[in-house]
Image (cartoon, rainbow, N blue to C red):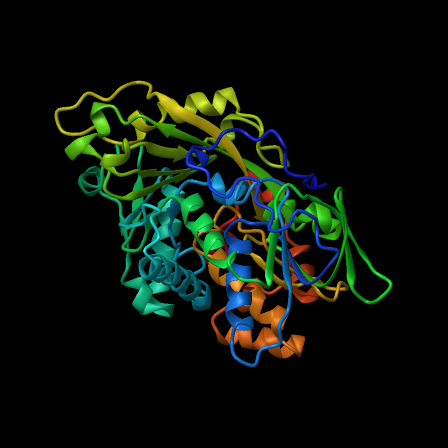
Length: 467
């Protein structure tokens, strides 16, 4: 039985990404508005995207003016987006039989890149190759099959991926052998400071008179009002809304308990490590990394040299409890030890450098992911709850998805006809496989539970089934 998430912890662990905070304690008005046309819950990248695109559409000449209220349980961008690995790594080959998914992730990547460039957002965005180290022969076999399939179903993106499986090539990528059995190299990846990106977006929209944002206002529950709208219960009072958007990822289950078996909270752990001589200067990493194998799903980027070149390393879930945990206030000592000691074993030290057995951490923290039962995000109106929309369940893969998922939800919220609005979102690129509807829920519930899939390391169900 899946365990639903509670409210976000008021005593969260200290994320490195929050060391340069902005908009702390922001409340547009002293008092909480009692009514709004649209309420958006959550201020991570999904919530920022929903509001950005809502206001963009509402600002069009002739558009009906609507009020938008944003409610945040803690500070702005204090949950998963402000606690993640600092990378945006599209996985074109994970669903090779559905080109719409890889196309969507690529479009999401380009949209973020264009947004950052056009607005000159200082968030350490740097485009670089992505290397996914594989640590079992089975993973290498699946990767060959997936990339070959992608090259047939989506040749444009297929050209951006290749599988490497010889010792010489792996070592050239910086991977230690014989531990690494293979790798997938992707031309498209990036590192960034996610909190700076998201807070810059909020700063840009908060000048809009239609918008009111209230931090430290957790939504305790949602219930139907007597007028066909929705009542949002908070400890500061009641808010009535015509439409509600849940950009709450793992915490969605607190407000929509019926989805508790579809999105399960999962605690991830991160570290900011001092690089030492082995990974400094000319010996620094030049790519984004992931390390995939049995009971292994780790990830790494390195910050710029002029900014201390921290190794931002996360994962190690098999060394401590994770699935079903929604409290990001604790740091597991065993996972922390793994994160400090794993990189000298996974990566080759720079030429002539001696790798250290344990790296020093400046920050260690946790964040809560939302693991989806069928591994894909849930985007759309909640069945049997007309007017409530969701963008959640990214399974640790939110950065290549959430921005355009938020845009799709904005399209649905403002559509006069719900069905036609969904059609429009799909025409604009949202994969049909992401749509939240009764049919998909039924299919997902025929699959193993998230807990069983995670135990069996079976989230790549499509690739395995077709191999």
